[in-house]
Length: 203
Image (cartoon, rainbow, N blue to C red; front, side, top):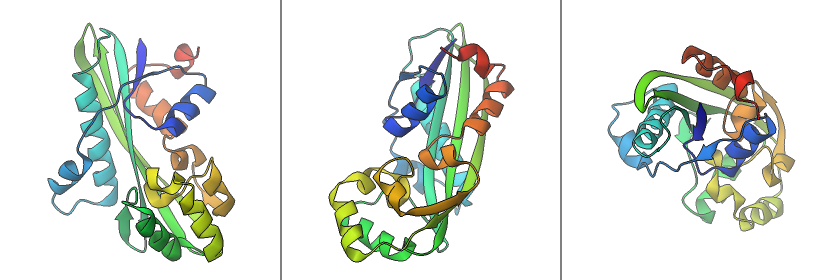
């Protein structure tokens, strides 16, 4: 049973590799804005789960393995009642950090798992993990320097926990791996639901 990660996120790949898995990577190419626009006033958990499912479904059509389990994720930050993904540009990232500094937000990651047996879709499972993130109060110079690295432009909520952004996170309540982009506890549960033991997939 081959594990396929439907994500171009190096952070998600790193989490899985550190946890003993060696997934193939297939990028879905899903138009996330179009998926979100097709939903009618979705709840935050519904939105990230729908995006994860769309990515998993796209990759099902792209994998060559007959026996595989496809894992897809999507993360967004709920801050001040607004759901935000990756900032469009440096200015948006700076504006976002002006709101986040000294406050807290909820990082939601939707997960979707699809199992293929003999090339046929046999089982699927999905779920969401929410983790509260408490942000530090960096100076404007620190925010400008962080945004100038380009890192915040490529991640949901304009911050990371496991890289440069970690300097500006005071703490988390919940699952740290979910904040990085893929929840190990939730993924273990979802894999079990489709009949896959994570320990049997350790490399």
